[in-house]
Length: 312
Ligand SMILES: [Zn+2]
Image (cartoon, rainbow, N blue to C red):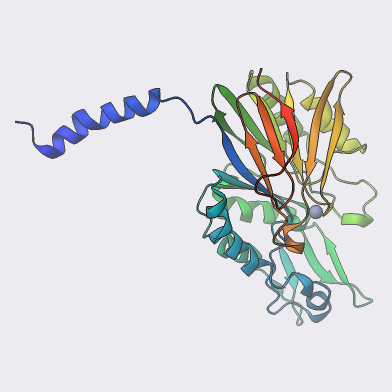
């Protein structure tokens, strides 16, 4: 007779693993797109900043409640948040010190999430807020390096870097998610250079497009693709892939679904979702099938707003 522990480890476990490996993938993958959660902890923050950003004071508890409650009821497989996770990486205090702890507030808010959570960074996640000589809040991204290191140490999906990729399987179709870090613009809205990505990230993106084979690409980024130079550089890399079915973006705090040209002959669909920081119904369901992607209306469990062919 084989002892029970030995029989489980030696015989039953390999058999279960074999069976699990040979099971067909689920026919669909459901996920939630959230963006611009702007989680904010204003304790100790200098008064001019705290006053100007007070509208975000309850965003952390609101996100915590949503992820711990409604997400489970929605029955999704994962959650994807496209940047401006927090309102600022650091703030100046009344006495001139720097106040940190915003990433901690984001971690508290996301802890109850019952499914894998993927996040990418927006402009606010790389920003420090000071107070100008005129007594007004003034943000810049001089702390971007420190902020990226802190995000990588804190959030599991950013551990390998602030631009990253993962795959999901819907029936026979593999979906390759590419998450970018495109919210850097140095001095913010005053910076004439606009948003910029290092060549390093663009080259990584090129390799992602070239090496992920027939997998259908889904690109998530913070700043939507437009006509600016950085968007053109990203689009040129995306045009190398056979199909980029979907681009998910935030930043502008508005819903929208737009057809977008990639290079001369390719097209994609860019979906923007309103800021969760401005309303707890600002979430969007996306369902991946083997042959199509269903994009639902913001805040709706069942109303499909756009269907995109994919995979075949
Ligand atoms: Zn933004």
